[in-house]
Amino acid sequence: MNLITLTTDFGTRDWFVGAMKGAMLNVNPDAILVDLAHEVAGGDIRGGAFSLMAGYPFFPKGTVHVAVVDPGVGGPRQAIVVQTANYFFVGPDNGVLSFALARERIKSIRRLENEDYFRKPVSRTFHGRDIFAPVAAYLSRGVSVEAFGPALTEHVTLDWPEARVQAGKGRIEGEIVHVDRFGNLITNIGAETMRMFGDKPCEVFSGNRRLCPIAPFYGAVSAGRPLAVAGSTGFLEIAVNGASAADWLDLGVGDEVNVRPWIKSR
Image 1 (spheres, helix red, strand yellow):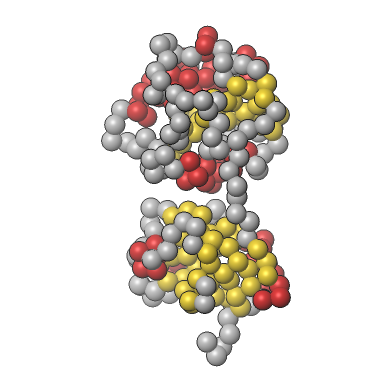
Image 2: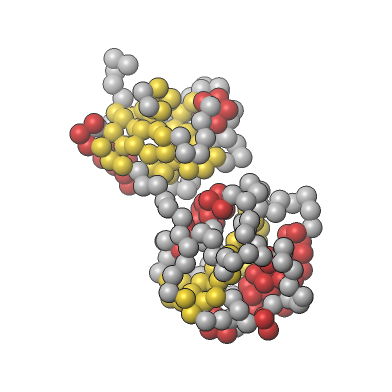
């Protein structure tokens, strides 16, 4: 499989992504390079982890996923490659891979130490180009993960905030975990959790502040009105038809929300 995806906080204004692609193509000219996300906020490891988690499973088995959100570049953090039952993941061991890896069956974790597979000289500030890119390209050519360095038994993980079912209160409590470019507020409340309400109509609150009803699609309410939908990530997301929910509702990552059945008297 010659397919490699890239998730970074590099943006597209500068040469960083292009340089990574050049380093990959020098190793494997037949590589197919796919941009998964490059507008992750600078240094936002959790945001990068979410973007990778949301996008990686839609690629064919054997795809190499590279994620570089690396504020600790050049420091003591390790560089790793992880082979799972379905994919390869390459990046800094700072948690940026962890949300995706939590959904995979891990077969091997290796520390990237074998400089035969690095671009030389290795910059202290651009491991994306000089370490992660060439390693990914060698993987896409069929080089075994064992070639890159010694085995590890664990990797750095970020805590995922689990939604809480409060049956006694008749609600599900969660929080906002991501804000997309449209200003939609993606929560950690999954579709499976919502089944506790059956077919009952429900509403979303922030504390005791009513935010919006849950509806089947964005246009189910009039322009400028808020709603919540089961989003494409599998999580409940809060939106405003034609506007930014983040701005309109003044909410962001970490803010708590809860879902309750709709009560006619409210």
